[in-house]
Length: 631
Image: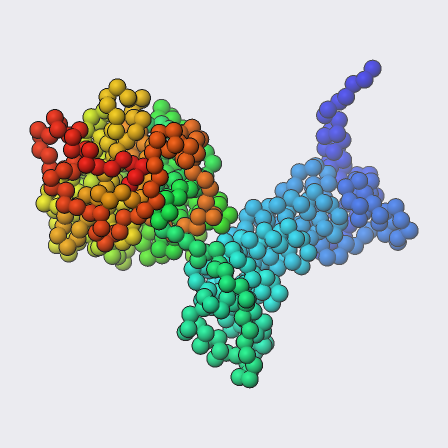
């Protein structure tokens, strides 16, 4: 007979643990920080080479009934013993380092590795410098490398943490020598080093010449050079700088458009956001967090930090919101969880204003609003909205000056950050259905993106001026026709309106996705309050092959690092170049001059101001536009 009882090992451990808890048949007591732990020598020896050597050698402890263990905390020993008797490792986050230290001393590799993995996965701006010092003390190269890489990814923020000032000189030099520091200028690197010196200037000023060897001379401003020289401990010595002529990774940013597809129906295709560099025509991708579907919102800060909130985790028949909140780590290409919002919300308005992130309304919240403080990783409630804001694409939130503005069909409001109060403002002239709003040169611009299936739609840009509190139709009421989508976008300090149209006849329809689209771009002229058609073929917007009639593209603009982004693929994972080749499109990487070159007065031949009788000649007029692969 050959039979295996798969429950035997678990049953034995369970019985041994019961005996330990009752102090029955135990043959040794471990004394740790005044606490006594009755144990079985055989169990300890089977789990720990440290105890195995202790109990099977000629050491005095082998015969002692009570053994004192030094350099281990009582809480850590309790955790270690629970694991030894149950196979389950559980500890509080603030005890992980103690448990890892104890596991290394007791030579319990599984526990040590899992503790290190936990610390690596839970690195943040507040603890990463502490973890680096701890990993360096233990000579754990894997955890050291992970900590340094995380610090590099958040360098400017970590350098402001108190723990950063406690780094040893070798650790600081190792960080300052890295090419992948996420800093906007070399002056940021110098300032971080000078703050470290200033923490204990009497002792640390002597290290300035050594730190200078990490500074990249050609990228330091003249004012910063003067400050460095003024702190030099000896006027006779000449400071020697790094020979590297390579910019830090954070300084290799390029202004890109981040395209976010908003859909009206359930859709699983939003796996990544398209990032497009008009200066090169390059297309890249930012992967979205796992399990993210509809209902999310994204905002960008002036420091190019991306935040994402909300989401729907199921279909329209059983919608369920979850209150996730993330910050994007450019270097590590990951979305890092931040403090959950107070209220679960999806389709909320997410905006940044003067150091805070505001989450406005959304599904299941309707009137709730809250504010996030990145420096404290904390959400707090603010005054509720006067009117529910929750339907998909039915409202927009923007910021201007010191206020947050909410625009909707039911009404428009402004929130005063100083008074914590919502105030009614003028309603739009034409109440929008599916709207998009954007701020530009002290005003709010808004369009209605409502699109009927397989029919052309018309939109007019309305402009709100907070100085007089009035809405007006921009461009003297000029209207724009679109068949796929319409969206406002800022790039290079200029405001554009993009409309997408069917590029094929009606026989080429495939579930709302024509084989080719045509894209028209109008540039706003603030001096004359007019919209002019961009005729010169350039690369203002990427090919929008993945846009459907039931979706809309929202654009964010941020300075991103091409080498830190993924490759963008479309059309069932066909690479963009292959797709363009299949459709016979030519790549044109030239960029239209935002100063006005390539812009023409479009009163004669663009898709606007056509009146109700323009349907018969619309095909002829569309020929004046450009194919979407060439814009």
